[in-house]
Amino acid sequence: MTPSEAPTLTYAFAVCRGGALTALAALSGLDTGAPVRTLTAGPLTAVVQDVPAAGFGEEALRRRLSDRDELERCARAHHTVITAAAALAPTVPLPLATLYLDDDRAREALGERETSLLTALDRIAGRAEWGVKVYAPAGPPPPAPEAAPTNGTADGPANGTANGTASGRAYLDRVRTRQRSREQHHTLTLRAAERVDTAVRGLAVAARRLRPHGVEVTGKHRTQVLNAAYLLDLGRERELRAALASLHRDESDIQIELSGPWAPYSFADGGLADRGIADERRTSGGMSP
Image (cartoon, rainbow, N blue to C red; front, side, top):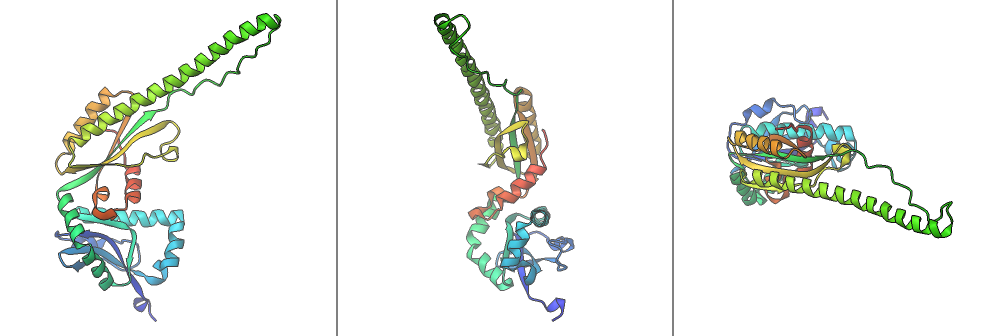
C-alpha cells in the first residue's frame, strides 16, 4: 500500500458559514502532508484535514496528547487554522482532536448539530472574543512567625505569669492584625476586579467568567483575581482599550491585562469550544492596556 492509499481520518478544526475560505489551503495544519480543506454539510462548512489513521487512531492519539511537547504543537496548529478561518468568516471552533472516520461521518455529525451551530454562528457573526485578566500584586512577604511567649521568667512564678499573659495577648493581637490586613487587601482587590468586570460587560454582548489561573501560570509575585472572556462587536476595540486604561489609572492596586481579538472559543454553543486550549492561547498573548 502506498502512502497515498494509507487509511485516513477526517480531522475537523472549525465550522463556518459563508466567506471565501480557499486561502486556508495554504496552511500546513497538523503537518500531515494533506492540505487543509473545506467540507460542505448543508448550510455549514467544516474546515478539515485528512490525517493518517495510524498516527491519529484512539491509542496513537492518546500517546500523542500525553506528550507535552506534542500536545503543545497540535494545540498551536489547531489554533492557527481556527484563527485563519475566523478572519474570513463567522467561525465556531471545534475542540482539539475532533476526528471522524471519514467525510460522510463528519457531515452526519454536523447535521445532528446544525440548529445549535447555526444559532452559535448567528450569535458570533461580526463579533470577536477578548480576554481580560486582573491580578493583585503580591505585597512584601509577611514577617517570620514570632514564637509564642512563655509564662515563666527569671523574675519568679507570680511576676512571670502576669508578664507572660500580657505578652501573649500582644502576640495574638499582632497575629490578628496581620490577618485582618491580608483579608482587607484581598477584599479590596476583589472589589476592584468586579469594577473592571462591570465596565467591560457594559461594552460586551456576552461575558463568561473563567477559572482563575494558579501560581504555576501567574508566578508567585501576583495572584489572579479575575479571568474573563467577553464577546464584543467588531469596531469596539478603541472603547474597550480606553475603558481599561481609565480603570488602570484609577485602580492602582491591581494589574489589568487585555488579550485578543480571538476566535470566539468561549461563546460557541453546546460546549463545542475548546476553552482550555483557548485560555492557553490567551495566557501567552496578554498585554497591559
